[in-house]
Image (cartoon, rainbow, N blue to C red):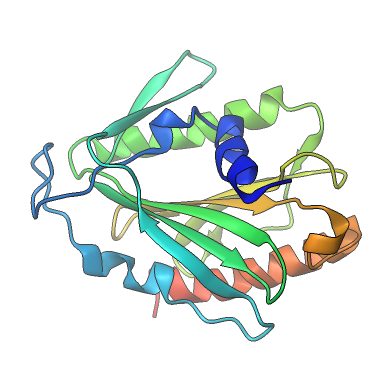
Length: 211
C-alpha cells in the first residue's frame, strides 16, 4: 500500500478526507480563539526507545475550521482552532502511525468533546471486524483514552485511538497503520498489540496532562 493511499484511506474510517483539514494561519483563528503553535511541541517531539520516530509533521490544510463526524444521532460538527498531522515510522519501514492533533475551541468544549465520544461509540458499534480495547485504563496521565483495533492484520488501518486532554482542550486521533509485511515492523497481530501498547505508553507520557 502506498503512503498516499494510507494517508487518505485511514481518514475514511472516522470522517471524510476533506473534514480532516483544520485551520492554520494568523495568530487568531476565525472562531475567535487564539491559536498557540507551541502547544504542539510535545506532540511532535516525543522520543521513543525502540527506534520509532517522527518522520513528518505538517499543519493541516488552511481554511477549514470544522469537520463533520457521524454519530448514532446523525452527523455532527466538530469545531477546531488549529491542528497538526504527525507521522511516525521505524527505520527502513513505511509509516507506522498517523496522528491528527487538534486544539478544540473553548466555546462549547463540553458539547464538542461529547460529540467526539459519540463518534467513537458509533464507529465501534458499526464496525464488524473491530473490538474495543478494554484493557486500557479510561484515564492515563490525565488523559481520557479510548481505542479500538481490528481483529486481524487486514485493511489500511489496524487501530484508532482517541486521547482527550481536557486541561488543554487538545485531542489526538491515532491511526495505527497496516502495510505490506516487508514494510511493517510487526508480522503478527500479537506483535502489533505489543508495539501499539509500547507506543501508547510512551506517547501518553509525552503529551499527558500530568507532568
